[in-house]
Image (cartoon, rainbow, N blue to C red; front, side):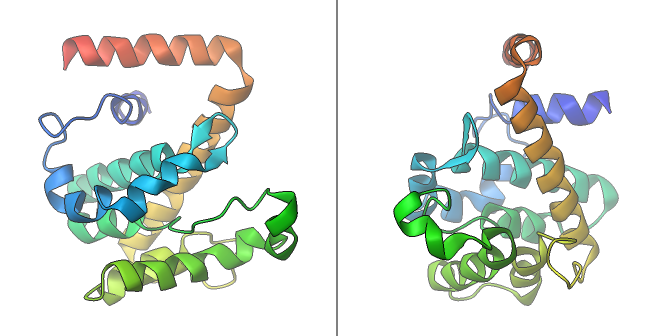
Length: 182
């Protein structure tokens, strides 16, 4: 668990130089204006959506690479798994987002197809099924399961970071340690 936590911390200090090829795999998507615009949306309390998708995509990339799975497609699907351009908590527009947890994978998949017209079926499946078990159909690939589990792991870390001052202090110190040690 410590290695997974360290990889998660690394996502807060990620650069092209220390990304182990991650940005080579997702850079064309990740650095697009559409994905970069996700920084304006709250995802899990103190964490914005761009920060969240960075963590999920990088963790998925590393785990799939370690398991001998299709890590590039996993990272690309994970980069677009929450590709929706609204704040589902917003009172004015939020009324039609009451079932957001069930519906946003569909919106993200539609936006992903628009952003990447040549998107693979594997990537679309990852996006469409990442909210399992909230959505009925489970992931249809090992890579999809990795992304779905990475999403839950990162969300739990993000909520903990936002609500627990002691954890937040330790986490920020760990990020600094990783920045110093590479």
